[in-house]
Length: 145
Image: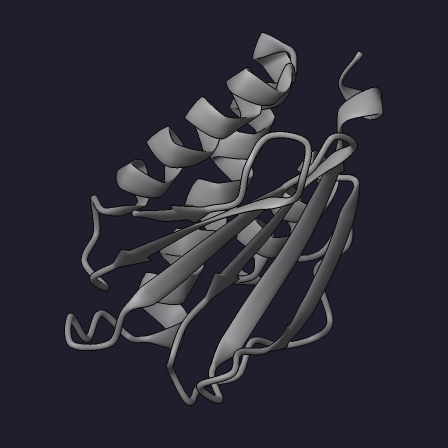
């Protein structure tokens, strides 16, 4: 885990994980530590942990297709107002841009993305600098009250 910055300015923490199930828990612990220190409520911290775990699992299973030589990168940027999270993979299989809606058939395989979208304040999908997928999340501290 790498951290840069000082109090009062934006701080960035980067966690690189192997694409192996179980390592999403490292990302969950990291984001929980930061969210608690920032002042998010305990319930909101649990939401953040769940969103990050889902994003990491998606990157491990679908993006990198469990190839342990391809890392999942979790970038956490904090400032006084918000926590920004980017989970990216290096896989070439693109995440579909259309998310499931309530009432969709249960076989739709993108419910993790639907869940993430409901747990964070802002959500978007994009491309990572390595050409893989990126899930961007933003959570406002004021919304934690």
